[in-house]
Length: 201
Ligand SMILES: [Zn+2]
Image (cartoon, rainbow, N blue to C red; front, top):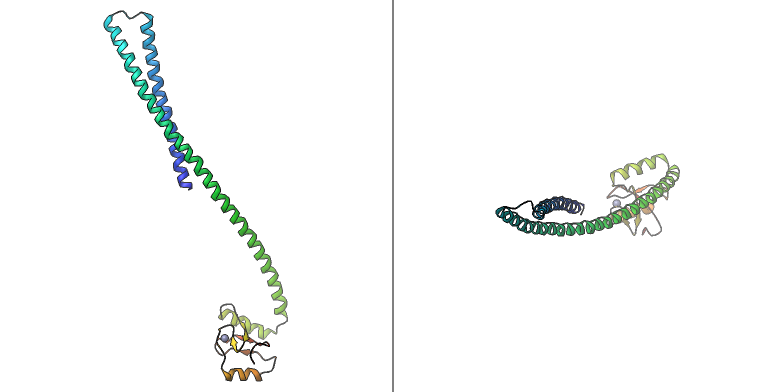
């Protein structure tokens, strides 16, 4: 739309230049006709041939002036429609720009919210991480890097929520017998499994 606006503005200024030029042409012809008319009225020209030539020129200049005035009108019409396009496109550009501004403001506000949330979650994580034994935290971090950001998954109804695979009866039995503080892992994805009351054990 900005490109269209620039094109319309260029056309408008081209028309303005054309109009000035056409108006100057009209002025020149008008001045020459006025001079001829003065000479005619002054009575200084007496020869019938000269008088006839002068009169003929005045008539031809009037015709020429009329033609040039038509050109001026035609240019003015084109200029007016270019001005209308400029006004219309200016309005449309402004309207789209205000949508952009609005979206940008909402995006920035969302960024701010996300940053604040990230800061608070990071702090919470630090507290939790501080209470986890170093070797377990090391294992978790390693798995997290290897497994697309998820190092531990809930065991829900015998299914690992990390890889969505149902565990075999053998694995389930082993997990059942494991002490509550034993770190159990998914045989399929190797993630740490978090046991809860709905693990299906
Ligand atoms: Zn798994």
